[in-house]
Length: 196
Image (cartoon, rainbow, N blue to C red; front, side, top):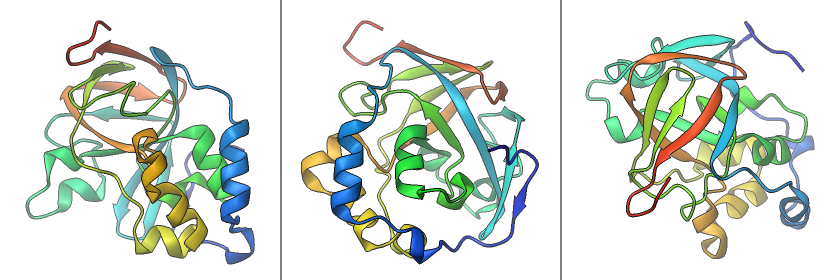
């Protein structure tokens, strides 16, 4: 499924494709284990406005703008701890159930373990030519997420017993500018208090 260059003008999901909580929980168990130290960037999405999405092949991240052209940098006071939204590719596919991953509203989809144990706050990673850092901002499901993927999906990503897995994803901020592209390698550079 190649959506590169696609612009999506709506961010509403198809309720017929919403999975039940039991389906999501069963699907989580069958997902392959994500790599802990290295991975790849699978998908880049820019949000030029609140409900629009652009799927990109290449982008340049910067500390000032995050993903240039993204709605984040147009906010009156953009919060650097919420600069880039990041989600696990396999988990996103499970929840989307055939819908476009651009529907999530996240910027980057990755093949990498995003759990709090693996990537504690302050962890640094190289993504293509850029360096990013995990921020303390929690990335929770919200009413928009519920409208796109259903109430069961919202309960699934926000469940307290699995909160440490960061099923909804995490936030990164850009430390060093650099180019990224679909397929770019991701390497964990450091973890606070732990060897990389």
